Image (cartoon, rainbow over all chains, first blue to last red; front, side):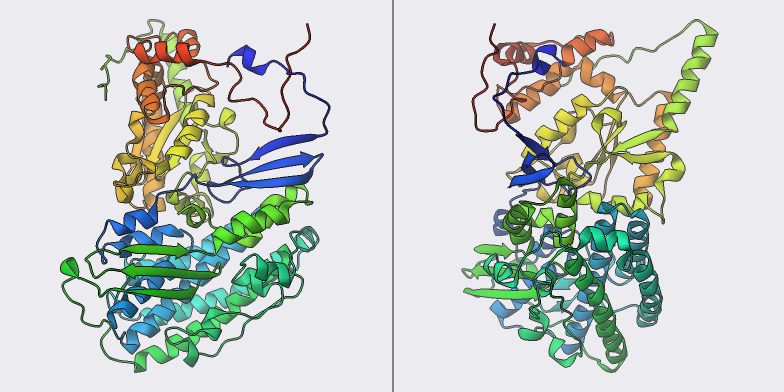
Length: 380
Length: 237
């Protein structure tokens, strides 16, 4: 290091200082940064600094065939990739007027809910780690791995499944797979009381997380908050119930809500959603053997597939919130424009910036993890 | 792009047998106590928690995550590096203490991977810093990551993992590529040339036209100046 770079500079008197929080910081989720202005350890101003993970997805998708983009879209949101590929496939199906067979729809629901459980286990494990409780994180990651094994078995990929294609799903379920899903669900259900005792009833967590990063319902609606973060402010809005896609209108489940809108409520909503996802999966496991038929609608030669011109907007409830795609086709072999509306761009930029103000520096990590922001999806 | 100057690896033939035993011991200890820098640059980072925690348990190999670059030995580049990230990666790499090792995880670090036509990512990582080991795949499984780390341990033990020496010996080449990407006024707070002299690693490729350009554009304290909105005044004499 050059010594002249480290000479103390005479600064005008000020009790505020600036701190670069991230991107290389264990308290930040992924490759993301915040520029904080601090007074003591209290945050006076926060500025989100994204772009570390920018790959230019929307431009890349314009340069690839409709079918090639299926491999690209899951990479937008790494912890919860399934809703991305489903949402894109749904958009292409609506443009082409493809009718998805019923069996494929049920299999898609199963994939989405497995992915949701995996993402939630990862998220509250991460939240636990920011409050110093690493055992919960270790447990969460280990239990998530069981779900990844299931994904590997029926899609071929541990993380990126690339299982949906426009018109259905790529392959049939392996023999005895539903039995193994059922066993994994039994195991997960037996683990939930352990998680409660270790983490959710733990006073360390309750006292640390209550009152951190509070937002009211009006603020949440004004800031474009969706998903579990919105439900933690008391509004029971879920795309699965209010604008049903696939076969969610035939399934029974509840929308868990909490009132307080703080970090504790947000993580608790995720914990309650685990139960609902398990409940949905049980119904799927029960119903799937009786639903026979093709798993894929016939599609034209994918390498010379000119999707009819038009515009379409689809939305799916992912584990982070509302994932939406706006796809424009001009009748060519490649999309004319694809816009991705991810939930995290709202959560990690405008919400995190506003909620950090007034909180203490050690609570920034908690706020970010409880918002479940996914930096690759912010930057895209 | 200027081609890398191949410099024969100088074999350290220590005549003193005690010193040779000592070297071997040092290398053995180094390979068994590695700290991994906690910096997730891309999507491959999602397979690191399983590799670190209960199921695959990296810690049984003596590898643990570490939060600060000064204390870390391994820089894992987990996936694509966008140009904005690459600047931070190079800053981080130069701040790490030698010996340091770089592992490129995922296909994106090898040749751009999925994003080969993206305008925002750097395609080949080894143009900007020496990479000791690549783990290809999109993304590599935790078993592959562990296997790669074991290979690195083996290479450290036999003394083959010498990427960090390569950075000092061919600094001009790496700096040239960095300048091509970030502009001619690119500089980092670390004085690599002085460090190279200190380690006695000043090779033929250390100094060249690009380091001359660096000297020309160098401005003290530009990167570290605090930006709080008020003017930094010159200290009164």
